[in-house]
Structures are given as structure tokens and as C-alpha cells.
Length: 83
Image (tube, rainbow, N blue to C red; front, side):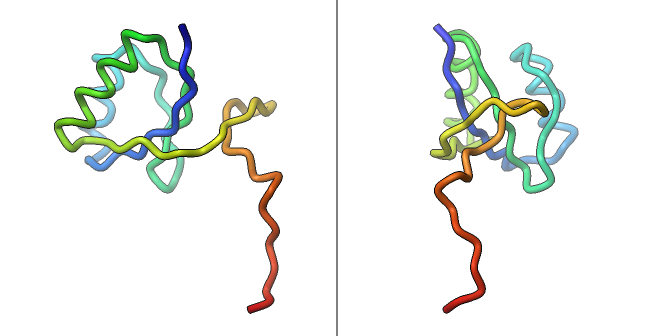
């Protein structure tokens, strides 16, 4: 089964790179430290272990396919300068 997840990495890029390699995940973390992934059950289990170690946190974001890959769905957001 595949799970769509948003991860926020709470560690430096060197350790993140090593953990991604160990879990067999693709590289590519956003500027704000998030990564949007489709993961297998086994990869999710490994990520849960990383979470228990305090290395990452899961974020509750609905992800959609875009030509650039997975990204958060912002269709319900309205940008405004009104208070």
C-alpha cells in the first residue's frame, strides 16, 4: 500500500540525506524543510521510527500531483492583505 505524506525534517541536511538514503527515499526537500512523498508500508514504518527519535514530524497536508511532482493542495486558500 502507498501512503502520501508530508514530512518536516528537524535535523541538518547531512543527517537528512543519510536517513533518506537508508530508507530508500528520493531526495528533494523544500526550502522550508518539508518533503512530499508517496511511501510504501515499509518506508512509512521506518519514518515512524525516525519520528520517535525526534528527527522529523509528519504534517497534515493534502497533497496533489503537479507537473513538478507532489505539492500541498492550496486550492482552498485565499491570499489577501485584508485584516
